Image 1: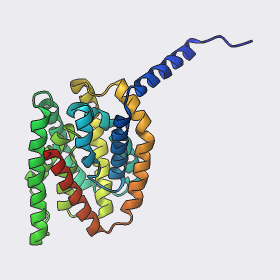
Image 2 (image 1 turned 180 degrees about the horizontal axis):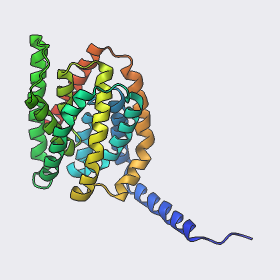
Image 3 (image 1 turned 30 degrees about the horizontal axis):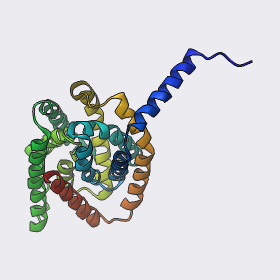
Image 4 (image 1 turned 30 degrees about the vertical axis):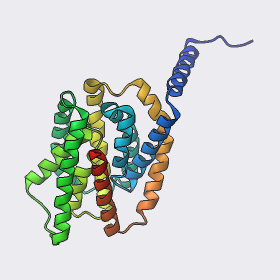
Length: 267
C-alpha cells in the first residue's frame, strides 16, 4: 500500500519545479560568465586579491550594473566564509578597526547614491579615483618611502571610498589594496585581514541591497546555489596558488590586477 501524498511532499515538489524552471531560463553564455566570475571570486578571496574585480565589468555588461551586484554578493559571502575559515588567525585587528567604521559610513552613502546616480558615470568616477590611489602607492614605491601613513584622514578616505565602491559593483578591492599595502602587511596577514574585513562588510551590505535596491531575490539566490561548487573550487585554487608567491611577487600581482580592474572600469 503506497503512502499518501503529504502536504510537505507537495511543497517540496513545488520547490524543485520552481527551482528547475528558474535555472533553465538562464542561457548558456550567461552561465559561462557567472561560472567565470564565481571561479575568480573564490580565487580572489583565498589567495589572489583583486582577481574577482576583473570579472565585474563582464557581469555588469551581461546583467546590468545594479543587478550584477546582487547576483555576485551571495557568491562573495560564500568565498568570504571560506577565507575566514582558512585565515581566521592571521588578521591584524588594529588595521581592521581603523578601516571598518569609515567603510560602514561609505556603505550607507553608497546605498543612497545607488538610488540617485547612474551606473555608467559613477563607474568612470570610481576608475579615476582608483587611478589616483594606485598612482599614490606606486609613487611611494618609486621614491622608496617606507613610512606608514598614520593620519586619520588616510584611513577615513580609503574606508569611505571602499564603502561606496563596494556598493557599486562590489569594487572595494582597489581602495583596501591601497590601504593595506600602504601598511606594508606581509602576504598572509594581508589576506587574513582582508578576509575578515570583506566578510563583515558583505554581510552588512546584504539587507541594504535587499531592502533599498531590491536586486537580490529568490530567483538570484537559486542561481547562486548552483554556483557554490565553482566558488569552492576557485577558493581551493587560490589557496594553492598563493602559497607559491613571495611577498614581493604577491604585492606586484595585487597592484597589477588592481590596475587591470581600473582599466576595465574605464572601458
